[in-house]
Amino acid sequence: MATKASARVRTQAPAAQRAKLAGVAGAGREEARFERLVYERVRLGMMSALAVRDELTFSELKALFEVSDGNLSAHARKLEEAGYVTCTKSFEGRRPKSIYRLTVTGRAALNRYLDHVEAVIKATRQG
Image (tube, rainbow, N blue to C red; front, side, top):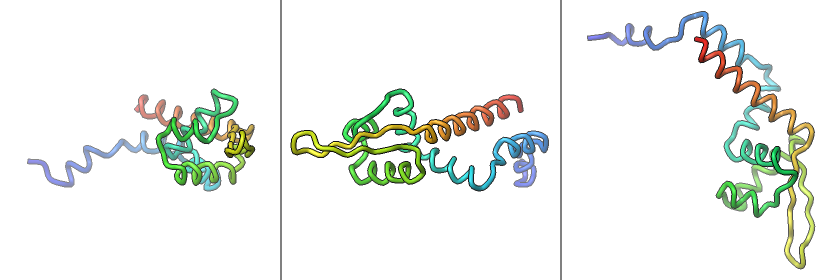
């Protein structure tokens, strides 16, 4: 029967692998804060969808991610505040219409995040 200590030792990554992963994950605090901003499911989805489509309306995004108006609005606002997306508001007839677009800064942040994820996957597979 294995003791807790021996079980703990077996599940820990070797020191070299931990160091490699720490180097991959060791972004600066400011960069890490923005990675967390992109990481969240709805925000990552919004940015990914806007990376392949020039623009999407609020209604399209809401249907795509199956979230409430308030939830989508809160996520969109965080991305706007970071300068990752822009929102253009207008009216179509008497109905409000919000159109979202990914900014150059947003595309760069998405690419940094994807590069980071790819590096973590590569380091993990090599371990």
